[in-house]
Image (cartoon, rainbow, N blue to C red; front, side, top):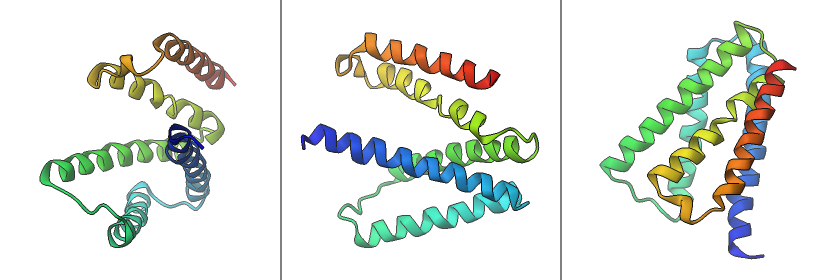
Length: 146
């Protein structure tokens, strides 16, 4: 298997499955009447456990102050987003089947920022990327109206 396909499998398909499972587990948590603070705390314990295992058994243990601060910012933005998803599920009784496609439109934000900040336009077919983005937006509109 070509290395770029392995990268797409490991870095794209497998995370999609895991993130999908996380969404389903999030809905179950929302039904358990738990609050957002404890939710994030226990999710954090799960993240901490995975991080400890990868640090102990992984090959790359490097870290510096800049990387640590960036990792904390990633955790803060992700956890606040997940807390808001939980508010949508619990407080506003929004179906997960409607929320998940909407919050996963984050791919548009990542794609646009990666094109600009990392000059990735030279590495991708921009026309196809933009066409895919339009289809994602149309899908989001359809989902929001479902």
